[in-house]
Every structure is written in C-alpha cells, then in structure tokens.
Amino acid sequence: MTEKFSPLSDRAPKRSTARNAFAFAEGSDHKFFKSLLLSSAFLLVFLCAQPKAFGQVTILHNFGDGTVINDGHYPSTGLVQASDGNFYGSGVITGTTKQPAVYQMTTASTVTLVKLFARNVVLPAFYPLLDYKGKLIGIAYTNGSVATLYALTESAKGTWSRTNWYTFSTSSAGIGPRGTPILGANGDLYGVTLYGGKNGGGTAYKVNPTTHSLTFFSNFPSRAPAANPVTSLLSAADGNFYGGTLASINSSGEIFKMTPAGKLSTFYTFTGTPGLNGPLIQGTDGNFYGATGNTLFKLTPGASFSVLHTFGLGTDGAGPGSVTQGSNGNLYGLCSVGGTAGYGTIFEISTDGSSYTVLHNFGDGSIQNDGQYPQDRLLLGGDKNFYGVTQSGGSAGYGTIFRVSP
Image 1: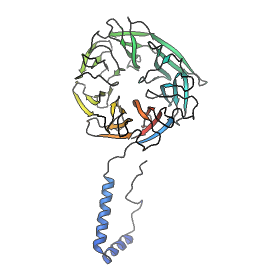
Image 2 (image 1 turned 45 degrees about the horizontal axis):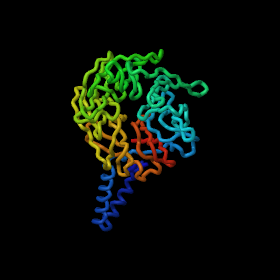
Image 3 (image 1 turned 90 degrees about the horizontal axis):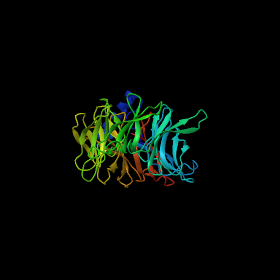
Image 4 (image 1 turned 60 degrees about the vertical axis):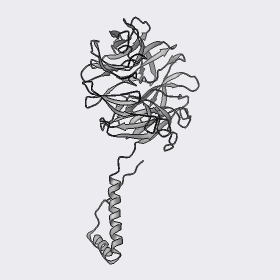
C-alpha cells in the first residue's frame, strides 16, 4: 500500500530554529546550502504533483487452497452484494462432487457454499445473481438446453432452499434466457430470451416476484440486426429498456430500445459485426456506456456514439466486459486477457475518455497469487471498493476473489 507523504510536520518549527538554520547558511558554504534548499523544494513539488497511485488489490480468497473444503473451482460470474451485506457468486464447480454451486463470502472474507446443484445443471457464466428482498434469483440450465428461473431463500436456521419459478421449455413462448432478470421500476422482474416467440427471434418477459407468474410481452423479429437479444436489459432513466442483439456474419449487432409495453425500435447500429460485450450501464450524467469488441464507448440519449478507448493486445489489456461507475464518477472494468503478463487487467477511465489508467496487471508478480483471467464485471460494494473474480490462478490455480481499492 502506498504510504501518504507529508512534507510538513504537525507543528511549525520555532522561530529560533529557523534563525539558526539561516545563520548556518550564512556562515558556511552559502552556494552549497542554497542549492540544497532549492533541490529539496523541487523534490517536494515533484512528489506532491505525482498522479494518483494505482489501485490497491487484495486477494480475499483462493479457491481450492484447502481453507474451505470443497469450495469449488473456476468462478466465471461476477459477485452481487445482497441486502444482508454478504457477497454471493455462482458458476463454481466443486472439487470432489463436480457439482455447480452458489457460494457466499462475508465482509470478513469467509467463504461457504450455500447451495449445490445436480451435476447435469449448468450455472451460466456472466449471469450474476439478482438480490431481491433477501432472495437470490438466477438462471440454471439442465442437460444443456432446458432453462429454469429459480430463487434461493435462506431460512432462520441459515439453510438455503431452492424454488423453481419458471421453466423455459417451449419455443412458441421463448427459450434460452440471456443474462439475469433485472428489477423494473414497477417492481416486476424483466428479462429476454435468445430464441423463440412468435417470430423465432427471441422474446422479452416479465415476472411477478410475488406470484412467480411469467408473461411474454414482446417478440423480436426473425432476422438480424434486430433479432436475438443477447444481454441483460438496462432499465433507463427515461422509463424504457435497452439491450443488445446478436451480431451475425451478414449483419451488425445493435442496441435496441423497448418500451414497458414491449414496443421495439433500433437505438444504435454498430459499424461492422460486433455487438455488445455485456449489458449497458447508464452513468450519472445520463449517457450510456459499454464495450463492443475491443472498444469502450459512450452513447448519448440522442444516440450520438463516441469511442472512449480502443484496446490492443498490449499492456492496456484486451477483451473488456461491462463497466461499472465508481463513486468518483469514473468508469472501472476488467479486461479478460492482455496486460503486461497477458492475464488480464483492471482499468479506470474517465467518462470523456481523456484519462485511462491500468490499476492492476494480473500475473505480473506485484501481488503474489493474484489470479489469472478476470471474469464478468466489477461490483461496487457498499464500502466503495470494487470486487471481482478471476477464473484461474491463485495459490491453488483454481481462481480467486479480489478487492480493489481505487
């Protein structure tokens, strides 16, 4: 951790001390002492003018290191901080039984498994859990194709039970939910499916979290670029929903706008084939921010597009995911690969793109066992620090949970 540099003592020197120093200067080699004073003043100005230090990264847990028995391998989904203050993640595969699991990490960094799923279940990567009034909402795939919307509820005894709310099993309604549902302004949960619906191009659905009833209220067209939504929705300040559609060989991906009644329109079409790398966010300034390919971008509410930063395979990283806005207004995110060691980076960028900083290079040796290949997105915790996971690396090679203090 970088120590604070204080060029001044707590109390000013006594006047007699200052006079003695001046007298010494007059009585000795005046030129030498004057040069020394000037050099010291220059050093103070130089140190005080240095840019902010890189973020402090702390490894909170190493999966598979033996401290927690059968805690899992290879986390692939970002964390959520629930109303109980604890952090929750999914996507790990337990070491001995090879079962997918949901785990909990307390604010004291104690990790436990809260729910095991059957071995034929997949908890998809990049589908963070949703905390809804103490329940954890998620998507699980069985036998590779049948998807279920489920809820985990903790009892007074601390045990967790699973309730299946809906199974996406008929193509006429909607199949292949993408991303985790989000909470809408009216209290319902909203999500999308990649396929199915009246046109076969996917659907939008809403769920009553009390009755668990699910309604499909919008059908995407059968052909790209407006077909096949691939990201979780964003509930924007204008009352509409925004998301990304699948890019194909013959068409570019796009960002769509959808009213609460389900009316669809094109908000922005990308040049070339890339679509969104992950869900959009809306900043405190009202603009939209996201990543496509190796580019971070900004979109105004009027759909004016500007590039904030373009990544290569160099020291800045590559493969950015969704960004998160920090308490200082800047954007923070992860690159899954690249950086000085090739194992990914944590970055910070201003909303106008004028300032870009790599906060950490995974695997560069600066932090022992820091992990490799960070996944999904950063979570801004209640303590204003960011939290995330790496898919591999760490002391046992099976991934880590980390905290970064910007």
